[in-house]
Image (cartoon, rainbow, N blue to C red):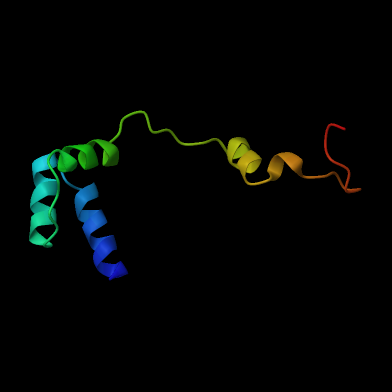
Length: 76
């Protein structure tokens, strides 16, 4: 089942319209509620998605709290 889910996700991600997403769902036997295809399309193709800089990724991954060579936190 995860393989099918991944395939459907890839198809939906490549869709050029909400109608195409609705067709993908229908072909897979999935019934979408009114307006759901539009919401899915908007969510999958949202504008303004940006990549994070390496230092931002380090911060959320614990890099901001890395210690120095002596194990002391930086900046303290």
